[in-house]
Image 1 (cartoon, helix red, strand yellow):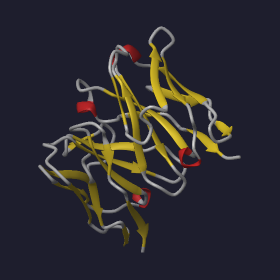
Image 2 (tube, chains in turn yellow, blue):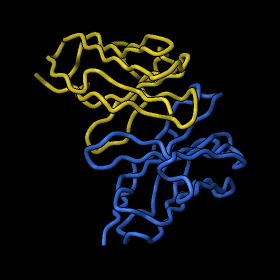
Image 3 (spheres, chains in turn cyan, brown):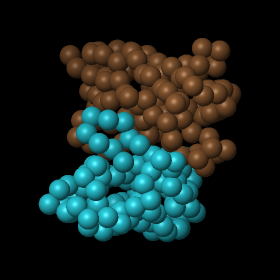
Amino acid sequence: DILLTQSPSFLSASIGDRVTITCRASQGISRHLAWYQQKQGKAPKLLIYTTSTLQSGVPSRFSGSGSGTEFTLTISSLQPEDFATYYCQQYNVYPRTFGPGTKVDIK
Amino acid sequence: QEHLVESGGGVVQPGRSLRLSCEASKFRFKDYGMNWVRQAAGKGLEWLAIISYDGRSNYYADSVKGRFTISRDNSKRTLYLQMNSLRPEDTAVYFCTRSSPLDHDDAFDVWGQGTMVTVSS
C-alpha cells in the first residue's frame, strides 16, 4: 500500500498568512494526487485534483504542485473560512489512501 | 447540483450485520464508479471500497476485505455496503463518494453527508 505522510500535522496561522502543507508518498504516484478540505462535522470537499487542477468554485488562493512522491498545497492568503483539516489522497493505485491530515487553526 | 444521501446507519452489536445505502440524484449514476470511505471519531479518512460504473469490478481495503461487500443497483441509482461480522473498530461515519477517470481524473468530487455506524454491545 502507498503510505502518505503530511507535514505539519497541525499549524497555527493568522488571517492573511501564506500556508504550505506537504504530502509525501512512499512511492511514486505520478500526478494522481488530490487535496480535500474538511470542516468539523461535514463531509470532505475536493479542492484540487491531478496535483494542481483547481476544482470548480474553489478560490484561486488555493494551489497545488509536485510530482512523483512530493506534493504541496499552498493557501496564498489564509481566510477565516479556510480553518479546517486538509487531507491529501493518492488515486494512482488501489487501495486508495489518504494522508493523516493537517489541521489549520487560528493563531 | 449532484447529490448523494447515505442511510442505514445505527447501533449494532459486535458480530452482527448492517447494510448501508447511498442514493444518488442529479447526475448519471451509471457512468460513475462509487466508493465508500469512513472516518472514526477524531480520526482521518479511510477508503474502504470501490465498485465500477457497471458493477463488474471492485476493490477493497484489507481492513474490510471478506467482511464488507459493495454493490449497486443502477436502475435505483443506489449504492450499497453490506457489512458483516462487525467489530467495535468499525464504528465510524460512513461516506459514499463518486469517482471517474473521465471526470476529475478519478478524484472524489461528490460526497454524501455520511451515516453513523456504532458497533457496541
